[in-house]
Length: 280
Ligand SMILES: [Zn+2]
Image (tube, rainbow, N blue to C red; front, side):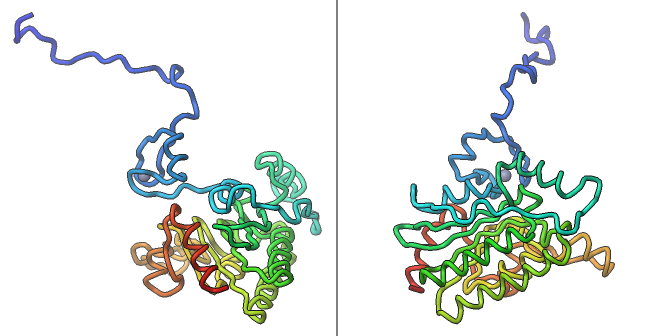
């Protein structure tokens, strides 16, 4: 075919959606890049293009953070009671049942004894997939027991928070009481000169931030995590002012002195073991 006779466009056959196996690709919520899911997982669930840290489930976090085979779970079978007989669009009992089936967890936190680079510690990790990681009686009780176990065994405590839900409204005052209870238990570590390291991941908000998550001797955050009390949208609507750029991100809070360091996920394990080694 002569040059002038060539068609203007080249037809490219694109695989139809149904030809692509589902679940193989993920879209980065930060840069919009479509990434091969296996590749993200190999990279500890961090986007290789923009370094966005995808949310981790509590079990994944434990697997990536502690020494293989060292984790012994504690207080696995504590369950929430519906003290208030809470009725919303769904009853609290129904909601709990659904969340337990969906997440295969009894509540929004896993605690246990483990080792990081051969150093013993007590660790707790909240899971934002279970009712947004909100703190009810079970989460409060398990963090309290973890702190008490740390005192008993004279071990450091690490809590990794990813709780966008704050205090769990379905448990009303019982939930708010956990703020004081966890804070009191952590106070005992201070009296005993035992280190408590708090790691804030995206998102850590409200009653969780206002209690155990902000009480660490060292506060570490993952890059670009949302950390705050009330969400930025609600604050803007209330005070009718524009908030500064990057408000309530790890970077903003580091600059303003609320947190001590921002640590990339791949450096977290070594940073924790260095700090534990230094304190103990
Ligand atoms: Zn990205």
